[in-house]
Image 1 (tube, rainbow, N blue to C red):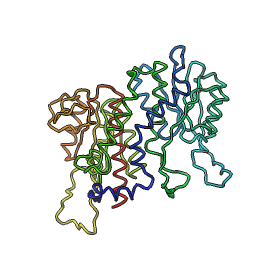
Image 2: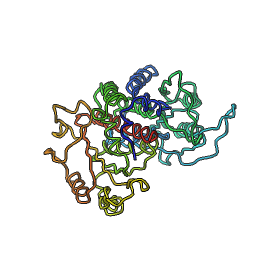
Image 3: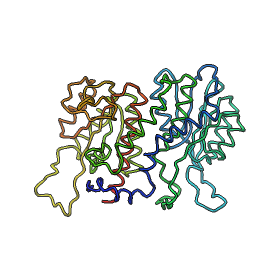
Image 4: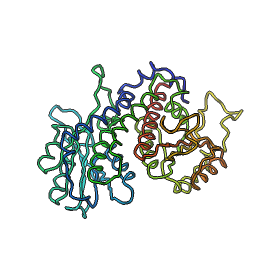
Length: 418
């Protein structure tokens, strides 16, 4: 059982946050600005593309692939954006210092057989030491693909980018405090990912997509994302009380539950996929994510099984000392609803982040959302709905991701202290 009073103890949160995840998320806006500035300095602003590529393939692992999925959601069906996950793994070799290498150093990637001169390959890495990505760049060069590489300057991948005539873009790493001691990992070759690394992958990718006409984003869309992330960091700061901090409130609501993360539309779909990954990585919690209306049939059995609302959590005869609190389902429904009435309560117009939509909201809802509410109500399962009313799809995506990223970290920190 989560002691939610820990969420209102900034000192306890600071002690639990040994790898400074909250600080990394607070600096996400600054990383977007730095990535934009460094991408322009690297030559992205001088790029003069000759038409749009047939397909954009995005290779990497972790949040690099999440960035690819988000680009696909923003580009829509008019463009083919294909994430390229690793297809094989070999035992990585230890470095000269004898330090245990990360599993990612031995991963391998393979270009699809159809990739060729009409296609663009984007390789993105926070480490830059993956030999599999170096080999992938060489494959793409031999096939005649255009290549863009985002990697830390001076890394093996950044050096390989010059050899294959790729456009090299720098990866902006988090700036760790000087007093930050290394945190021993339970699995040294599987270290947790920097929670804000997503924005260092996504920013140059979106700037490139704007340049080649893959997306129809406003010219100032990316700088505005940085401002939005800064505003979210202020609202979700550790010393903000739980009743005013939406991320703490969401974390407390998910504690002791099995979350079902549902989404209406591709923008919210990318956000729930990211949230599920962050809950696993940062909070150690499993969650099932998917889009409406597919989840209504895919998750139906969860409502009629043991995790549904049939069991009474206030059973008078339950031993509250020896028996743990029973797990129950919690549905979190995310939506992008530009101008939705339910997000404008209390004078809000969607500019203060996603708003919780009340059950009796009179605003328009699709049939899938209405059916989701009916399914949850029929089985006494709590459904919480958040909607972003921002008109721009990228800003709505950043809205939803920023809130849920903070919520995943808070849930993990409070659970660790409990």
